[in-house]
Image (cartoon, rainbow, N blue to C red):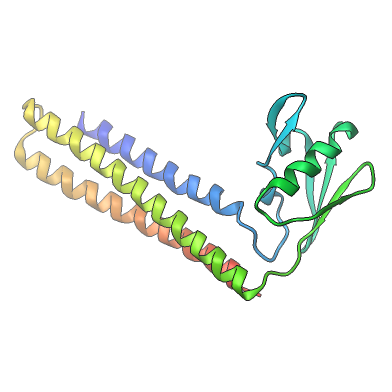
Amino acid sequence: MAGDIFADAEHRMRGAVEALGRELQTLRTGRASPALVERLQVEYYGAAQPLQGLATIHATDARTLTIQPFDPKAIAEIEKAILKSDLGLNPSNDGRVIRITLPPLTEERRKDLVKVVHKKTDEAKIAVRNIRRDAHDHLRDEEKKKEISADDLKRGTDRLQKLTDKYVAEVDKVGAAKEQEVLSV
C-alpha cells in the first residue's frame, strides 16, 4: 500500500514540474515561439477555443510569428484575442495570414518577466510540497490503522522528503533555465 503512495506522489510531482514547464513556455522572451500564443482563448462561434485549434502557428524567424487560420472568417476574432491578451503584441493581417513581430524586450520588462518566473517556480514548489503533505498524511493514516509500523512511517517520511527534494531541485532547474532565456539579449 505504501508503494502506491510513493508512486502516486512521484507521478503528481512530475506533473507539477511539467505544468511549470508548459506555463513558462507562454512567457515571452526575445525569441518567437508558437507556444507563446497557441493556448490563447479565441471567441469563435460563441465558444472559447484555443488558438491552436483554429489555426496553424509558425515561427518564421527569430522575431516573427505567422498564424494561418483554417477558416479565413476567424481572422478578426483571432486578432481580437491577441490584442486582448496581456502579451503586448500587435498583430497585422493581410486577409489570409496574421503576422506578429515581437519587439525587443526592454531591460525593465525583462526584470518583470524574471519576477513572474520566480512567482511561478514558487507556486510549483508549493504544489510539490502539498503533494508531500498529502502523501505523508496517507502514511500516518496507514500507521494509525496499524498497516505499517512506526519504523516504516519514519523510513517512508525520509523517502518522501528525498523525493520532494529531487522535484524541488527540478523546479529550480526549470526556473533557472527560463530566467537565463529571459535575461539573454
